[in-house]
Length: 337
Length: 293
Figure 1 (tube, rainbow over the protein chains, first blue to last red):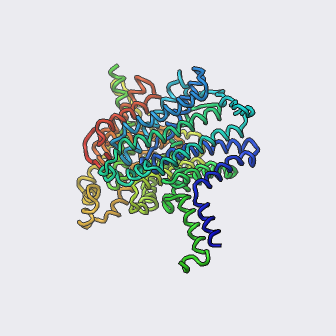
Figure 2: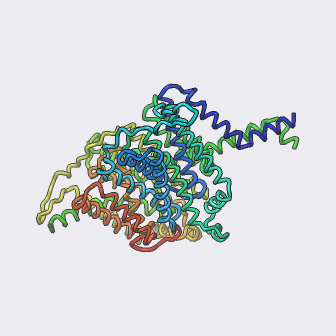
Figure 3: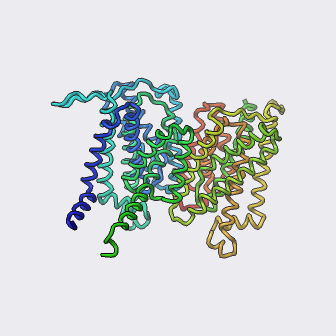
């Protein structure tokens, strides 16, 4: 009996177990949801998960309030789409360029803002997002401005040896692709935050001066955090463009940065799993509330405010609280120990 | 050519003086609290709507509606501080209040969207169409009104800060909250007072911006991003710097519209902002604070 519970606890605490659960859950989703409406929402969820964990790496781990995530998202989307549509570059090369350029944009912003902290960084990154948006709107010869770019093809079908052709016109396959990349991004960031790099970033977040006195090159690591987080947003942008098929600058207005921020906060910043749940909840909840009409976005704002006021750890803190409550109800614990 | 330059200069100063009203609120709050209020934008919008409904639904006088917007703004400022900033003050995380105000802003904008709809309101004041002509230039009575009211307000605020006991106490709190507390000043009351004054300025700024802007629930956002640029260019917490930077941004806006392209306004303003941050992060006008750099 005792051994059984220890084994069970070990299994529940192992990362591998939960990663397998997550992979199985991703695999099952398009089987459970067969209509195109919910499959579309699933893809949006996967894209938002990428945006949220990318921001969380910068905000939750390195402690840098970045309100420019919408710009990196937009740069990834526009760079890859323009390469595909104007130059006929193959999708995956364009994808790589989009990710790379978003990452470089992130590095440049943080190199520029390297002396700024807190509120100044927030406003500098907001300024970066405003400028990027205005360039997308005004550079009509390149981006076609508010008219938008239409008929963007989905990713090309994948022909793997020994397997049937995987066609990404099929929403289920497109979901596997985006969710697969979101999963990969999660794994990558998870490895990073568990490595000494994660501790370095956390040290910078907690106290930059002490971190520097321990020999940490704070500026270099902040640039690194921005580069990683913005590349992930760029990848999300590439998938967004090829999934929606049209691009307009309004999709990358500064309010999009706030939406992504809300996902991180509601989920729980400073953990990676929190923003995943936050992104899923804040994507699915408005869809479920569609019947309520305009109320849904009001609820969005109320949720962020209430979370900050009463549960700054977000859903992760709530889950820990509930788990601790049920554990305290278990007989024999506490009294026996 | 000269008359075009002058005409656009005056237009720029009219809009700029409204930006100053909005940006002064941000800078005052930053001065005492070292916090940014994102929902300041929505106080501007709500001020504009309050003035609109007072004038067109209740049939009130437009001048009185500016006072109504001021009161609405003051009440909202009181609420913002009581419900958001005061509870979060001692949490030790400087980013939490900022994020909470983003939440409040999303909530207010969408509440207004549900009430008023997305279609812009036509806010023509009785003074918008009365034109006087001086030396080849045109002024509407509205723009004269804007300059008079905002100059008087800024002057009163300046006098209040410089010469009254409360104003001196307010500056003391913004210089050193703890020492001010030891001198028998209640910092909490002064922070509340700052929020009320700052938001009242935003509300009355909204009442006068309403006819200038496209009045939708999202009108405040376009103003607030410029106000952020202004407070950084002028130096956060620096009242004189904010006034100069606000007028500067107004002038940039009207000259960009005249000589370049209206679509480029935000790019020019924010390029100046980023330049300021790169060269003199404490503000182009004067140095005051250094904790953010």
